[in-house]
Amino acid sequence: MADIIHYSDPQSRGMRTQMLLDVFQIPHRSELVELRKGDHRKPEYAKIHPYQRVPALKHGDTTVIESGAITLYLADLFPEKMNTPKPGTPERARLYEWVFFLQTTLEPFAMKGFNPETKEEAKTEIAKLLATMAGHIKGPYVLGEQFSVVDVILFCELSWYQMMGLYPEGQPAYDKFMEVVRGKIQQPSTP
Ligand SMILES: N[C@@H](CCC(=O)N[C@@H](CS)C(=O)NCC(=O)O)C(=O)O
Image 1 (tube, rainbow, N blue to C red):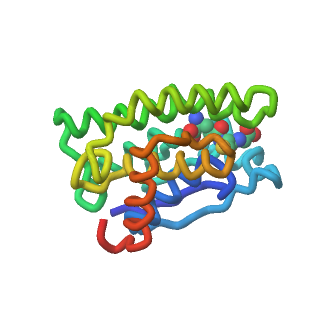
Image 2 (cartoon, helix red, strand yellow):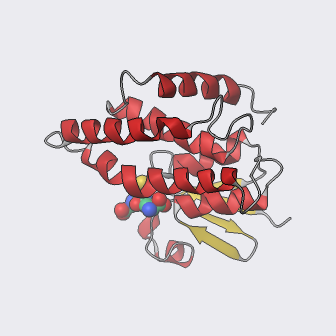
């Protein structure tokens, strides 16, 4: 297996992909791209990420950008380690749903959470949208008994909402999910 290099800054969306690599114990090298120092604007980084953001992943001759694409690429590369359901199954459909729901439907609201003027609106919209998706958590994990990449990215996103004051309150399905996954990732040797 070719080497994996993960380019990221801990204070970025790269925390999602870093968490995936760590929790599922995927051998890799982490390359720090410090946004505050402008590392991502250096010309050599444009060879890795064409529009110069983080994260990015290099696997041999293949470079992947976009945290969602990196999530799906890793899930395909390590189906056993990451308990990735087979293509064409209902579980695989659910995996795609959550990746796209988090990144395309919820993320624009999470971005509004950075602005004090739109933060309350963002919190309300996130809570409403998450309420509609609560039934898509089979339990104890999103896909049922299998702990997969979906659990890590949803956990990561909800942890970020907690830090930003955007976490959906009064939704026991998410409280329970957070508790179960927190317990699981404290023992990462048994994915
Ligand atoms: N949709 C991309 C977004 C990547 C992105 O915008 N990353 C931010 C950090 S969270 C970044 O690198 N910002 C640097 C800049 O905008 O100059 C993904 O999910 O990977």
